[in-house]
Image 1: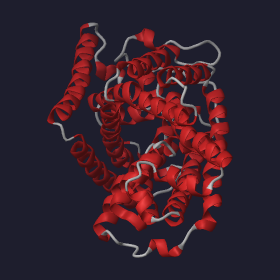
Image 2: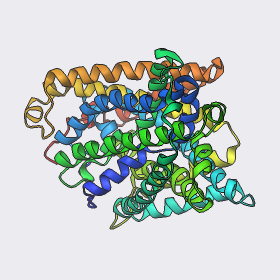
Image 3: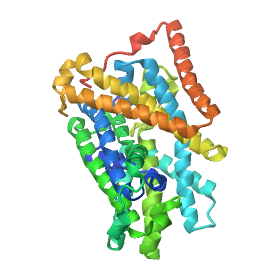
Image 4: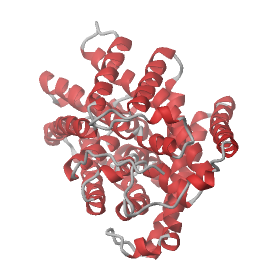
Amino acid sequence: MSDIQFRQKIGLPLVAYIMIGFMIGGGVFVYTGLVYQYSAQALPLAYFFAAIPVFISMMPLAMLASAMPISGANYMYASRMVSPGLAFTGVWVYALASFFGQIPLYLIGCSRYIESLAPEVNVTVLALVILTVFYLINLLGVKMAAQFQGILILVLITALVVFISGGIDTVEVSRFHPLLETGSGGLILGVALLSFTYFGGNGVVELGSEIKNPGKTIPRAFYIAFPLVMLLYVGLSFVTVGSVPGEMLQDAPEPLLVAGKSFLGNGFYVFFVVGGAVLALLTTLNSLLIIGTRSLFMIVQDQMLPAWMGRLTPGKQVPWVLLTLIYALSVAGILSGFSLNTFASYASLGGLVIFVPILLAAWRFPTQYPKQFNARPFRISRFWLRAAVLVGLAMVLFFGVIILYDLKNPFKILFFLMFIATGYLVFCWRKQRLTRLGKPLDSLIKKLDVDE
């Protein structure tokens, strides 16, 4: 493992901004319409209960990150405590699907929101321009990108609060009756689907060694971001359901915009679309670019990818080659014309693939690193740690089944399995090559240096 230490450090506010940006994505605008079909008037309850299993499953990761903060944590924990092959494959799948599919999907979605306000806009060109701007900002370093994220998050939260405060007086309690019109089954399915809108908060652990006082900062960021995002989601859904008749929401692809038009003036509505819908996508995009290089960089340090990929800019120490490769993949995704929704589903599955070994690493942590477990800043007992891991594994299994069912097409599922197989074959090929060069992987994959 490399002794490289990223010099730029960020504190609690910037860490919280990145985490909030990950969590408040375009999903709240897309999933609200989908889940209303299942949960109807119980939509606010579904948003509330959806936060609980995700929050519980994130606790083991928060504990790990506070006890042993390190950059590229998603790869490092899994490769050191579980399996290098599984860790490499998970990062491989998530990275390719995210950078070729998820980021372009966010950019095109963002451009289409802007097109709805300015029809003369070329969606593809605007998506490329926005991507280039965020790429250049991230080349200036993690601190600059995080500070820019902070500005965007403040505007985003303001836009969402404008929606909630603007519509709260129009809410009619009668529109919530009967509360469980679709039955408890509809509520449970809604909770399962909406859990995706809270996922992503774990991404911030990728910056572990770049965070000031990470032992306290990372858990505090979790405690700030989760309740805040949950309150915003519940508030948005409460106003949406209570402000307009149910039949107006029933077939609406984006109920928040339908509701917003009914009680916001033109100026406030435009601000909500740009500051809310557009920035929800852009803050997630920026968060992905901020953390996207970290696990890949640590893979390079393990010599599982070519050394030239790990080159850093002088001064700011930005992994500029990896960041540029991410940029190029995203440009290709925008221009490809492929179904990016499928790649976004692959990215979600990839996130689940890498989340499993991290949960297993948290399970093994007390026995593999007893000294660090006993001295952990974020206190969670061994019993509750393992209970949280089991909740996380159950959630991963459930989400995986839902996404695979949503893909439906056997070819798409087979293609994803080929995605996984390709990543593992690259790992095996690189491992054999290192062995031929007299550098067996076992000699490179060393225990985490917790004193770094």
